[in-house]
Amino acid sequence: MHQNSPIGVFDSGIGGLTVLHSIMDALPRENTVYLGDTARAPYGAKSVETVLRYSLENSEFLVEKGVKVVVVACNTSTAIALGHLRETLSVPVIGVIEPGVRRAVRSTRNKKVGVIGTEATIQSGAYTGALKAADGRIEVYSRACPLFVPLVEEGWTDNKVVEMTVKAYLGSLKQSGIDTLILGCTHYPLLKKAIRKFLGSAVRLVDSAEETAKDVVVVLKKGSLAKKSGKGIHSFFVSDAPDRFIKVGRRFLGEKVESAVRIER
Image (cartoon, rainbow, N blue to C red; front, side, top):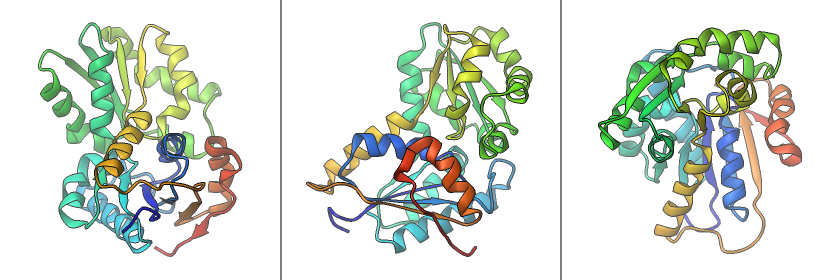
């Protein structure tokens, strides 16, 4: 593990590319290896045991690729497996929940914070616990939105079906008077336009990608692991449908997604 080693990032599918994009912006010299477990997505409806196993397998794949840090760019995996991964792996592990909570606590004015995520993330209570620990006065309003991930994976981010789904899921949150909403799944930033249209501009949307990238910067600096020169090289691996991954991935990262290698699961 040295300065030229890549940063490893994994997600159940393409959502983690929102995090990778922020990492590339913050650290343009760094090499990265991205794994999208597209064959087994979404993770949100899976059991705790299954998410733990998948998360460990993904992390071990990245460690075998020689990464110097693992970024768990999946809220479900972060909620369920982060502690286990930190105990098990030989490299630093960064999740996406703590950074999102930090931003939300700074952002809210009326102490009413909404959280949307997969069923597994919401049921874990990870966001509620972290928000309450940061500020006991915060009221948390949570809602699982299981159809959002399949919509994004399908490339549907702005049409009538999306608008109807957003309205069905977020109606009760709108009524509750939240002034901040945590997009508690890395796929959800792709639905920002539809969510903002429904909730209105007064509600701040918290996307943990930028905050997570800041954590990566800190960890690399602290461990003297930051790459000093050159331009980053980016590799992509998926467990299914590489052509579709490339097509949708280019919406996030443009031509940086040149190819994706399929791995057996």
